[in-house]
Image (cartoon, rainbow, N blue to C red; front, side, top):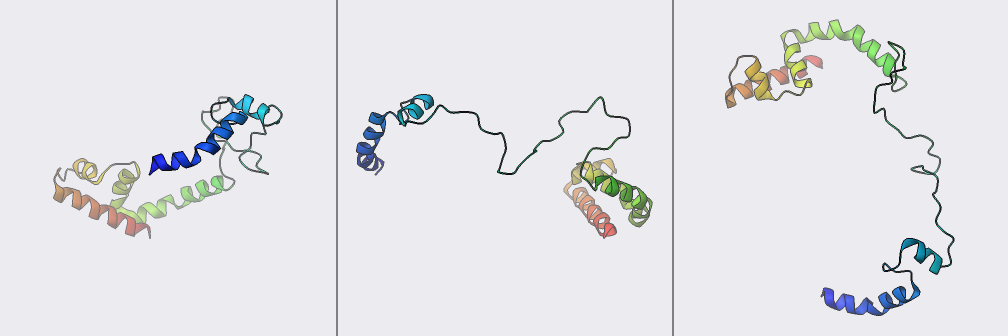
Length: 139
């Protein structure tokens, strides 16, 4: 099947190569053979109208202590979370540590082992139930 398809396109492929615009020619040579000007580097934007696209990749050593860089409402969100923290911890009660461990990336089995519940499937299920109760306390 593939051989037949290649055979059908062989004439077109030969014509493209004869014109010097196929894959056998370098990019610059193909542009010249197609009567196009040499390629120039275009604007480095993702889309029309895009002006800035970046991410913070390193700490800014010149930033003043306590300065905040982030989403426009992130400072307010952080302040509200700080104000709500005691109320949330009270609502969670003893589940707050399980939730913190979950948010730190510990697996259910690791949480069970850290609590002294063991390292079995049953202790893992116990940790999952504790995580579920902690999540219900947030709601």
